[in-house]
Amino acid sequence: MNIKVVIAGGTGFVGQGIIKQLSSDKFEVHSLSRHAHLAQENDKTIYHAVNLAHPQEWQHIIHDADWAIDAVGILLPNPMKGSNYQNSSYEPAKHIIDMLIKETKPNFLFISANAGPFFMKPYLKAKHAVESDMKELLTNRSYTVYPGVIFDKARFSSYIPGVILSHLTFIPYVKKLRPVKREHFAREVEKILLGEKSYLEQKYN
Image (cartoon, rainbow, N blue to C red):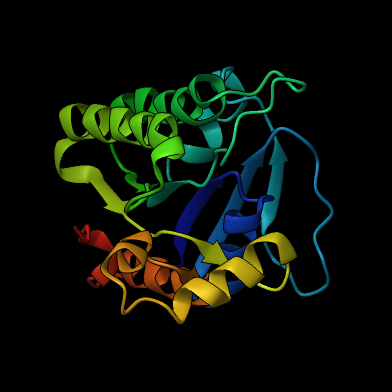
């Protein structure tokens, strides 16, 4: 039987990277996002348009899952769209955690961050708040990965900085920023879903 994985934020940059990595031979993948998404050719993912704040819309999807992954979040707030770290990073993760308290089968994988520049302190604070909640409320079912700058040609704005930083990791501060290619990050996530260990589970200080 395939491993059922539900990815909140599966239509985003990070979520799509994970979806591309997970073979339909091993995984049954579901994506939760606010808006409908048209799957590309050969994409076996089942896409659901839901509001995470309304658990009745998605509880039936997650109740028998093996894994729930939180790939929701923003890098920077956008006042024009009304998005901030509270409503776009912390609250979506908290909705999932609250659901998993009731649904005791799925494990929870949270995508945190290893480090960031000083102006990203609020971003890291929101990540740490989620980590604190999941460790307290989900105990042995919670897993965290600590990537840094995830980059890929699919998002040019991240690709050039990511490539540059990846060649400067001999500098201690840059190494803490932990630049990682999206496909490499997705492979590390797959390892965890298969019961293996990933170096990204360890924070680099």
